[in-house]
View 1: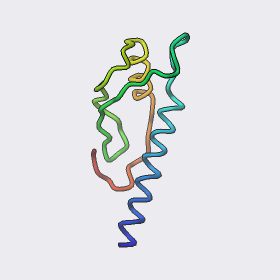
View 2: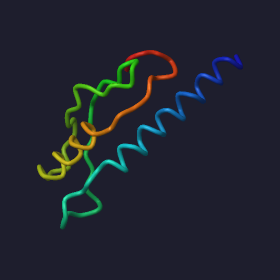
View 3: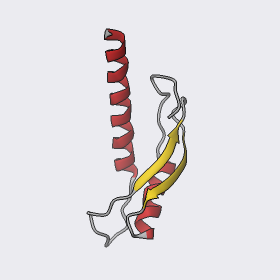
View 4: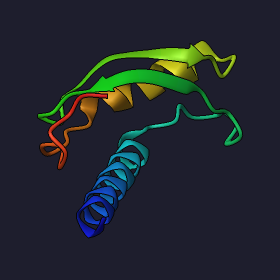
Length: 86
């Protein structure tokens, strides 16, 4: 049980790092609302490689959606603590 909790904590920290890196990498095009958001579907491999990123729910602004996908293309992650793909 403690091992599972420790793994869960490591994965939560890993995904928090991913979100932070994506936010830091995102360059919102000038003049667009701060309220825009888009949902992205992607695969995160065991090596930390992000692949297959695509917009699953558009912000309604093609320029913003493109900037989000560009952020995914720039982010580099370390190996996943659990060694899985999701």
